[in-house]
Length: 292
Image 1: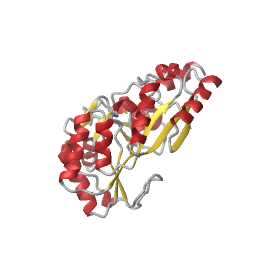
Image 2: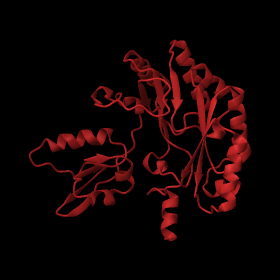
Image 3: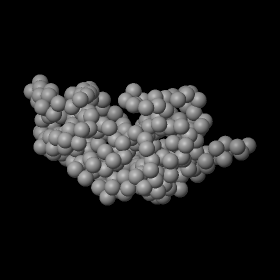
Image 4: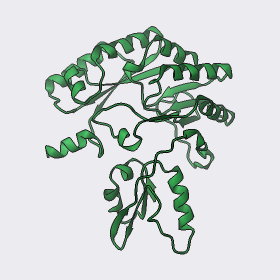
């Protein structure tokens, strides 16, 4: 039984593997409970369980989509004590580390990403629920919290409320935003708030230093906004990261050089250059099929 991104985006492809009996598509918390209860029966029937796929008599069967979980606070905290191995992210500053999501979804339209096909829309946990989990993790010896959201800073007031609750409870730890932040969701108030709670570094998905390329991939950010984000981040003494992509649609030698020059202009403490991978479910994946 497998779940996650690939079974959600490419269920038939996943079920072609003879070693896989069942797949869970989309959010799996409620699906897996129904599935396990059904598997306990002598003659299990999967047809009425939403959000799964399986094979029957050699035929691949996909059940209907399961509705998204409306209230994320209704979910229990992950059973981290069941993990056999303690993974430490390479960018961790203090260990042990715990990763959390405070929201699901993304409002972005980026053509290289398939998040919107997995978690459409944006849903948020309450600030109290999130900080309760953080407080619990610290009692278990965790030293650093990695927030995995795609859009933690999309709503300014939520960031400020999060800061206020962390400060009110006297929580002392280090926070890292593993997926980076959007340059157009940053201002001085937000950066001050992040500084107040122990954030030491910020990273931004720049992708390209050519505005036409940014427009093609529907990044919906202009170069001057990115410049401003780095300028403010350095003003408040954050360590800065920059994430860049090579091989985006309409890329050529000149646009690649534009990206390199823009990276030098921004001068982040760390610059990561990645080659575009057209993942199934993303617009660039289907665009790449046209050009094969």
